[in-house]
Every structure is written in structure tokens, then in C-alpha cells.
Length: 214
Image (cartoon, rainbow, N blue to C red; front, side, top):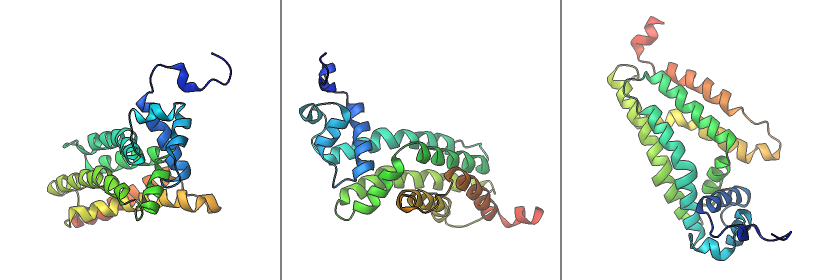
């Protein structure tokens, strides 16, 4: 191969996974509106024509990013949270730890920022993110709360509202890192935030009789 030859010539066909990873990087760097298919093709090392073999629009690429970069992590969280015989405290610690790890080792935090910032102009982003990520994640946590309430591990209350209170500070931490850290604000340690919040919220959700024994 001659120096300077485009990377896409090195293989007989484009690899969708490489294109999706490139889309994640470009979305995270530029946002949805500013990202161009040319940028994504270049990042992936393929021709724009090869990209069109798999994805016709940026919306298609965003759905693929959710499906391939986000859903596998949700699958793992669902597996943690779905252990019917696991103590609720163990589930919370495992789930929080996984969320913190993903958000500090991938570009998904920037994608969260993108969805929040651009959903008014691109409502399909919010729709996909809600239907495939948020609704499912809240459903997983809500189901774990329901099981814990039935075992007497969690105080009475609307399980879905309990789920909101569980995940809210982690989302705030992610947004803070993506919005304020770039302009010089000190960034929270998401791992430490996750673990501290886990202990705080577990104490707050404990039923009154458990508190009395402490």
C-alpha cells in the first residue's frame, strides 16, 4: 500500500462497528448538529459511500450508537439488578459502580450532554434516548425497589420516585463534568460520588424499624 492511501482501501468492506465507534467520537466532540457524515466516515477510515452502505442518516447512526455503545452496559446493569435473591444494598453498590465506571472511561457522558442540549431541535434524539435508555434503566431500578420493598429492605413509597432519587445525583455529576469542568470548575470524582451517594441513599431508604435498630 502506498503512503497516504486512505485506510478504507485496506479492507474489502466497511465494518459497521468501526463506523459506530467513529460516530460516537464525532458526536461527543462536535454534537449532533455540527457532526457531518463526512467527518464520521473520515474518523472511521472509510469512504462516505461505504458509510452509506450501512447508515443513511445521522439519526440512523445515533440509534446505532445507542444500540451498540449503551445497550450492552444496560444489559449488564439489568443482570446485576435482576438478581432476585441479592440484597438491595449490594445491587445499588454494583449498579452505581458500573455507571461511574462507564461514564469515566467512555465518551457517553458527552452524548448525554448532546441529547440534553440538542433535543429541542432534534426531538428524535430525546425520543430514542428515553425509549431505549432512560425508560429501561428506570424500569430496572424501579423493579429492584419493588422487590426490596416486598422483602422489607426499603421503606414504603412510590418505587419509581425512589428510582429517580437513586439515579438523579449521578446524572448531575455527569452533566457537571461535561458542562462545567471544561470551563475550569473542579470536577467531582464520579466513582467517589457514586459510592458516597449509595451509602447515603441506602440509609435514607431503610425502613423505620431498621433505623431504630441502628
